[in-house]
Image (cartoon, rainbow, N blue to C red; front, side, top):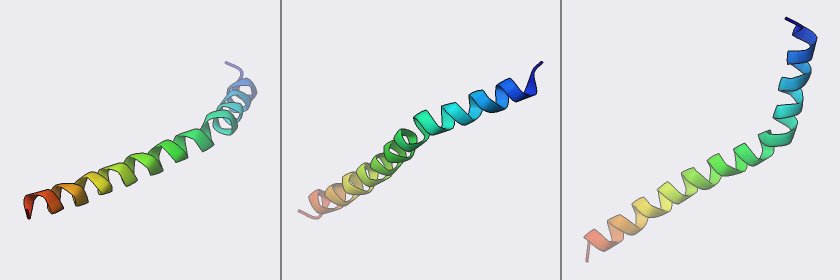
Length: 45
């Protein structure tokens, strides 16, 4: 097993997909928060 190869692969993967993954997680949390707020408003009607 070539450790250097896997370290380079992991680094490349993180640089290529890391920002998109962070944005996706932020959007998921924001969407869940928004759904919760809308649900609370609709239940109070």
